[in-house]
Image: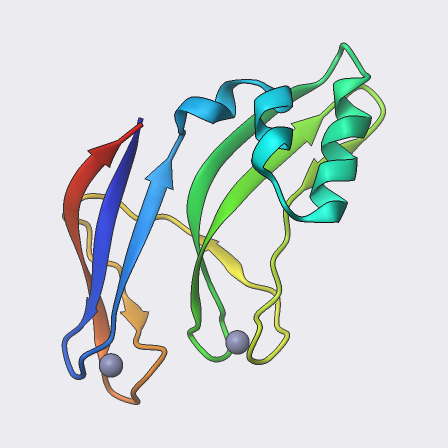
Length: 131
Ligand SMILES: [Zn+2]
Ligand SMILES: [Zn+2]
């Protein structure tokens, strides 16, 4: 189960829908591999699938760029086996900085600056459950 949030700027018209949580397809590496488009991530999943010791976390998450405040909704994955580990990393499309995994919860202030204007702060509003 996951939650949908709407991020809105208190200063300009910027708005973005963000989906957080574990979807129906995220319970096995096989089903995750079937929809992942990123080639590096796909290869990593195939590698970990072969190892029976693998455990993993996978959920949709909010990533924020610490330099330019760009916001992305991406799949977070952390796979571990006895010999290796892989965690998804996303780089900002605008400034190439490494984006930060940012928690987003119902009615918790987000303290994020708007990616589109200088003075705006983003507010999050819960709007739906999904699965
Ligand atoms: Zn704004
Ligand atoms: Zn950036």
